[in-house]
Length: 185
Image 1 (cartoon, rainbow, N blue to C red):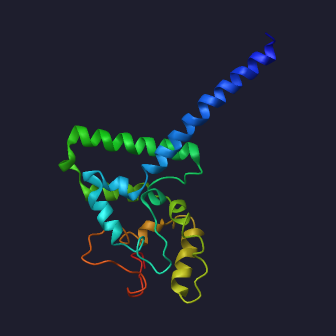
Image 2 (cartoon, helix red, strand yellow):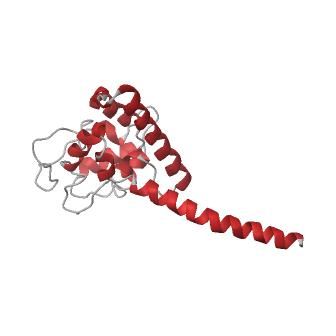
Image 3 (cartoon, rainbow, N blue to C red):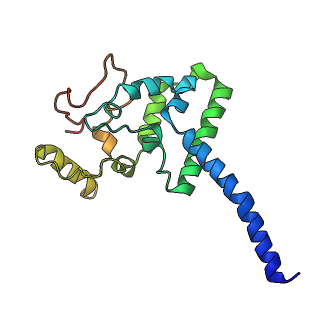
């Protein structure tokens, strides 16, 4: 058999086996990144319930930011998404089975998550934060975050840390709440 025919045969076998395997893996990764899947774990139930009452779920725009929107890279960054999702999943399973579901500390987990957040994660959804003509103070505050002077760098969560995963006795609808005042102001 000619060398190029053999090579084409192996390429064909690779595509026939590789494409379905990759597709099933990707589908599984995306499906296991839904808020409902996250809520199936006892440790994450508190985070799920506090997310449901936040403005990341209840807002006039009708947009819902899911768990993976904040806690994982965008799915189109395939390698980073797979890596981060795998690491988070392995860590959660390991903690569940070694420390038990009741050992989960929500306050500590929240601080760890906030410490790892980068502005780019918030800016995946909040892209037009420099144009808010009716909120000049917010516009100027965001400008200082996006274009900081050396030594004055800030992260989005420095000011906006109490928007999500805070126990509330009511649903926080953005349009019904008073004007938001960031913690850093």
